[in-house]
Image (cartoon, rainbow, N blue to C red):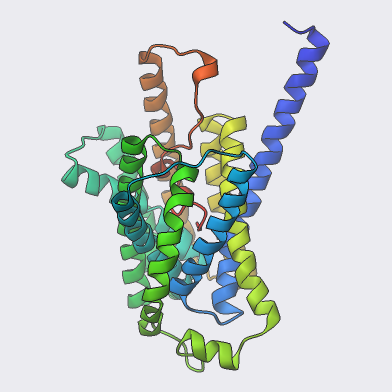
Length: 351
């Protein structure tokens, strides 16, 4: 063992790293939501399908560079599995960004909490999975809070509510497919992401005309070609590319945070991110927050914290029942996306 002074120095370094990675993760996740909202609202680029396509291209290039520096080892996967993943991933991320485009930042973030009950519903119907009664109570509390926040949101439209619902169930099916594929192929999230993002980018480019059918405000460009002809400016292009780069930082910060801390720390950081994003919607985009809506948000957050504590307890119980392995053989993997809705879109929090 190293001397006490040496152990103290190592402990301080680990603590500082954990604090730095926590702040890094919170800032990057809040930043990606704010920047994406600016792309839609300030730059007028209200084309979520095309934006996800650009994000996929930036993500693939960034991960290729990271793998070349030894951040992770690339693997070859069956093409069929990658195509299925790409379709699942596209369905969720396009709906998620359409949700952000049509709704306020506050409602977008609070509606993402519904991805947890949506996942549980699909797993119970599709996989016949059973859940503890206490967990169902926590999810019920989430639903009550989201419902209260939704009915009191005067800025919510029918189209916005419909897209938010589709995004919640899109996230649920994406969680299930990605989780199953990772287990079947014995792959990390980065290995899968770098493999299927080229398929995503190609499919999304073909599907980008779908953006023209989304509701748009008067005076907005009807399609990306018209936007490029009438509204294209250098700062807008830089903002769009910047949103893709921030997505890479989200993935990097998530990996570093999980590696340097525990699941409990990551869970707490997840709650901090939710609160920061809600505050950013009020401070930067003028989201309206009535007393009833605020009460709904607090109830939903309470349910989310309760659910997170149950998940952590169950994981601890499961780990304690498993035989211990050598620390040199342990692999650090990100938690399930159901532990934190921010993991749903990988690097596309996009999130």
